[in-house]
Length: 245
Image (cartoon, rainbow, N blue to C red; front, side, top):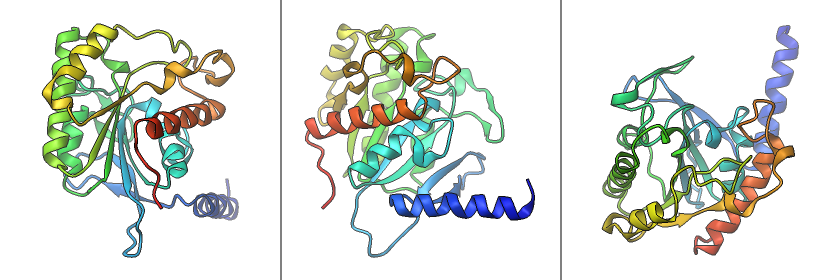
């Protein structure tokens, strides 16, 4: 692609982002970890709350961050979207016992590690934890402990923020609880750390998702991201999270 075409493409993408109300700056982790996450541009007159989505490749989508279901949902809620999503990661996966290298980014991090690093540069009003899909290899008790530890650290890091926990599922089989069954959810929600946490299950409302999955057979395509975004907004509003005024 020549410079002129590249420049035109970049301008078009920026224009789309501005029209959508989602303008992002590329932010490099100041810890030197090497991963980059889109962060809303600061605006002293901005009154919308910021939603920090911590997740995996499902959360981040394989396209522009603005097209992910996370940021599409934030747009519909009139929230600013701060997306911290790394492929292959989870509450355990990507952490100390399961570290791996992510191309163009560096070493992986678990969700809990990301909380500590994001604390240096982010002050969200809403935190959405969206993962667990990559943790099904680990014993359930270990995953439960890691989930609760992440919630506790998010609480202590951002005590004024509202925390949302998304029940992990895959779009192509939304009825599959991935082993995180109702008994597991009961144990999770019964823990004191979850007292003020909204536990939502947006993908369970979707069916006949064949046409919504990408060519890899796993991740949602563009239509899938839009459908998940709509389901996510429904779940968020049902659980009392209001849109910005």
